[in-house]
Image 1 (cartoon, rainbow, N blue to C red):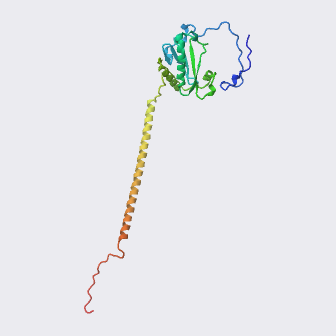
Image 2 (image 1 turned 180 degrees about the horizontal axis):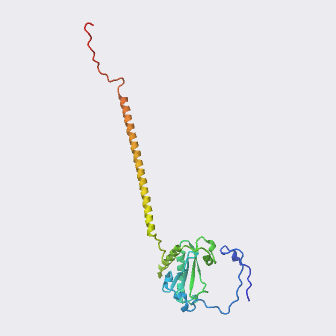
Image 3 (image 1 turned 60 degrees about the vertical axis):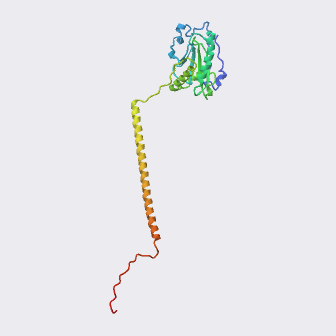
Length: 269
């Protein structure tokens, strides 16, 4: 007997709910008598078991960590897998204990990234039979992404840049490798300029440098001319002052007179 959908639940009004507008609940299908097998129930057909270590960002003897095949909307989404083909309830005590340690360690590694506030850890297990734990990083300050809808927001938000994504993967892998295992994620490659662009850049830099040198020489020449002009003016002023002082020191009324020869007066005058 089919379930008759009711009204939209209250969580549709939560700030974290990613949708708005007119919504309706889907019709619930009738339950099946026998559930279909999950992917990889047989280890020979398990994708995780057949995946090489190079498909992961970090590997050890008993655990592996992989990422999505491309950047998504969250700063980081990772999956922790057991190397052995086991589900959660099938783990022996040793792996069960290590799962707790690996969960804490991977959570800390992701939370160490810039811009990460919290790390959501989830396990559904309905799609694949091989144990896999999801780790989703919530961006710092994005309060609307808090709660149970973070995985939905990951598909809605625009993806982060590939360079940032690869850098985050390399940082997490290096963090895990501090406790053992082997990091396989590499940081993004440096985008080198083409030789033609480098030549143009060098020529432009040389032109700018030459212009700066010319401007500096012109400024130096102007400064030297100004100093010379100031020096000439100072010399002229000094000479004028010297002449004025000499005139002022001469005795008053003294002239340069010479004796006048007088002719002899005629006799008998």
